[in-house]
Image (cartoon, rainbow over all chains, first blue to last red; front, side):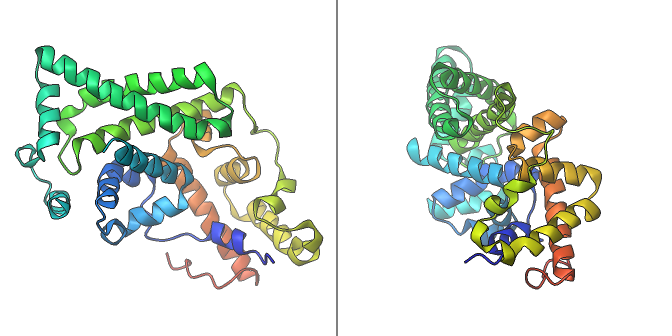
Length: 72
Length: 223
């Protein structure tokens, strides 16, 4: 059953979303906190909101996290 | 270690307060001679490894494989190394040095994929694929009577509520499936500007649909 949930989710915007520029600027800091098990999303809710909504930044974040784990 | 990293982030520790590994990277890369050359070679090796892994993850979606993919990864690593050495003085110790450095190569790979898209584009900016919308949002054809009005209202809102630029971005990204980084290249823009345009479009469309009794309560209107 789909009553528009996917469309609804896509159209929802989070006012805390900081946008790509700030998320990209802070991505290494955020990734390090996540890799260290720190509460990154609590510390940077605007970046967390952005990474949930922005495909390219979310993909870059996952790639950076994988890189940090892969070369640790 | 955990608390040290957190505290560094908060207090923007000067270079003297770096963890030992980061301090060694910065010291050797800022130096001269054989030690610097060895550090550059070691960093390049790490960047190549990361670029290859990232390119292989992204490659299938854009049908980039084989030598073409490897070329892209090696070029990304080379460009990232140049950027890292040029911006070494900007490293503020908010993260480990390697995490900061790896960010450069990840961004290089995603930007190169955006540019590469237009060599063999699987989507275009000329058409408007409204027929893809049901599939894009998981609406089942056999239940068309349940979602037809909603998508008609969405299309009307796209045509009446969005600015020409917002509409162009919505059509390219949502209807035609152009990757955002590829659209950035085509429009000579940047990721932040295109995302913001789509963000504003999404907010307007949801507000319009909500005002006409579609979807749920619009709790983003205040933003």
